[in-house]
Image (cartoon, rainbow, N blue to C red; front, side, top):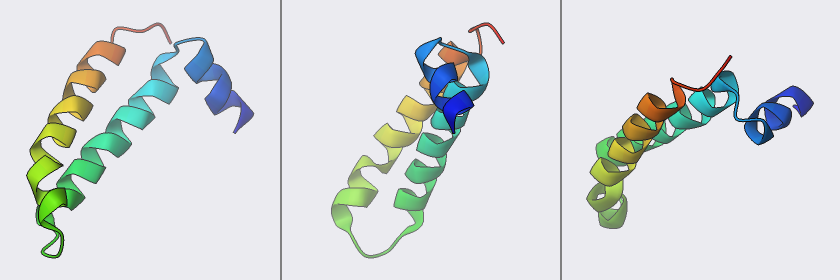
Length: 62
């Protein structure tokens, strides 16, 4: 856990890629759930933010 937080603070690729992947997965889950209309409404934006974030952080140093 400490390495993960240290990677976030020092802008390292591994930690930020994990955060971006979790955001993408959250967006997909929001898209596929049938219960909350607000979650379905914001699912595309959430997935898009995670994807753009993943592209940006893939240029961070290891």
